[in-house]
Image (tube, rainbow, N blue to C red; front, side, top):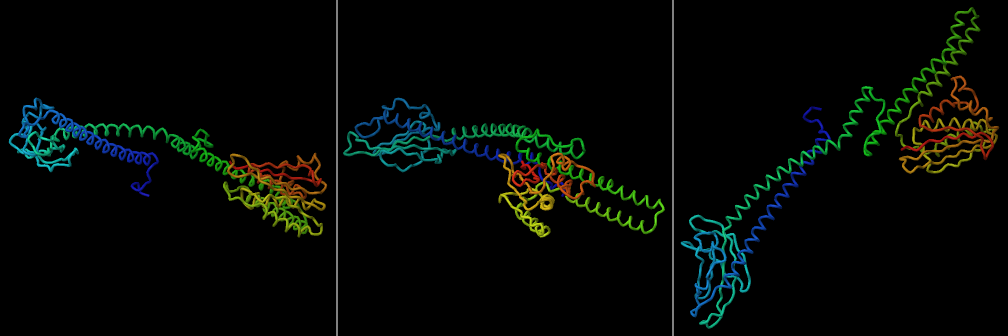
Length: 465
């Protein structure tokens, strides 16, 4: 794969995704704050214009002709109402009267349609044409007034106009300050994210460094100094390392055992070659030693084939394999009339390779059938632990034969030379089954059957954690 299409590191992925999320968050925050600030300025303007209108309504009087008595307006609520083109304007219209504040000179205010009587209304923005067009907002309040000379109520409308230039300037200043602060805050947050990501991903870098040390031989296995999320990974890698080393050691042992076992028949052949023996004797001895070497090679190859197992094999049901093996043994030992009883839990499963399960059951059941008088009992049940990922397995094979003397039990379990392991009796295949049990970190025990009185072989395979 080219460098341009190389997958991004976890650090880069996290930083990019977090930065995009941060930009989106700050952008939305900036837009929301800007909108809130604009609404606040407009609301303040409208409240201010409403107060100005209230002040004018309280001060204005009318003369006998129904016109506004200008002398009643002693002072304006804001000095800008008296300044030319100040941006703040007032107007009253209705009936025969009309009045404008001193700030309205040489231009006309925008005409607005009178609103509903007794209701305050806001309008705008509208364009005020004064030579230099500007945008203004308006407040108007329409009411009825009983004038002294009038024959009926007169509808009057008071309007307050205010230029938007000031709030637009405030919005521009606010936006400038807001985005500067948001950019600075964003940069600081990105730096904080980088620090946090480096700290949070540090265990992964440690794991990567340890893996490199494993490859170069500086470490033999991974440590347990990792966060909880990485411990299953490091544990699985350590289990794989242990399994591979165990398989390698077993292969070496098998080769060493094979070489050791072949020394004797080769020495016999070498002695016959060097000694003057008749051809018939020589031929018979050679044939015997060749058969012996074939047996040794077959035996060691069988052991080598079963020296390892898949680390995470699919669970294997015990009952079908046990039934198949017992059916074969019942045919072989039909003359003895052996009856095999099952006490197998339906949930009993072997977490390993089917060949290993067949080897275990086959060797122990064959020994039990060989030495039993009439009965064989096979028991299997799962072993549970709270934190285990897979249950363990308990297997026991009992017979009603003569049993094994207490002083011989240690010899049976002891790993001896290859010739002893092939002796007929309870010792047949013992080295093979012990190696299999050891590869699964299990235990093998031999004692007297409390129910049948003969020998009892017990296999305990631990749970997988």
